[in-house]
Length: 238
Image (cartoon, rainbow, N blue to C red):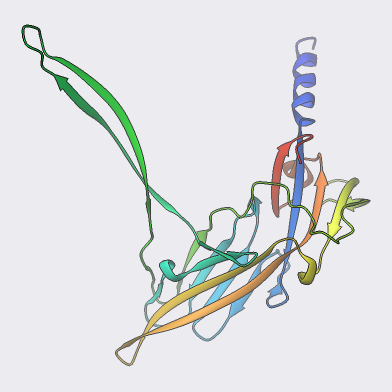
């Protein structure tokens, strides 16, 4: 029992060293389902979004409803954050090896030296084939790993009690937003390709989202049951 006390104190001290920001996302364009997903659907494709996870990833599921192959043109697909366009995701090719350098000097033995190297090459993804009546899932590069601040002119964070999914109501600092004053607006631009009448037809799709609320707390999302997006920082870091 005596040995457990220092361990428990250590766990408590580490728990108190982090601050969390829970992030809620909404859309004025797409309906939000009961499990915090957003769905866009037409006769050809069904697209499902969620933003659950650390550092606000954009998780997307593309369902091909057609009886023929569909291709997602990732090179022409963009993630637009506050009007700035980014590639939806990155792929990396890692190269490792060893370079040998030899030096030959007269009247003495040649010497050799070795240098270990590792290079990372960004590999742009090609088109991704989605077979008929099937789906693929992708997660974008994360949107932010920093706490989000309200824009100038917003009242900012207010103290309130919030009912977490697991456990009682807890004291938090919270800020709510409409799309017009949200500090973070996300748009996705997707480019789908299908064959129609012997020609390749492009189907462009654009969807809009915005951060609708921010909650700051010292409660780890794994203990509160928070399933949405979150960012973690060392306590005291803003």
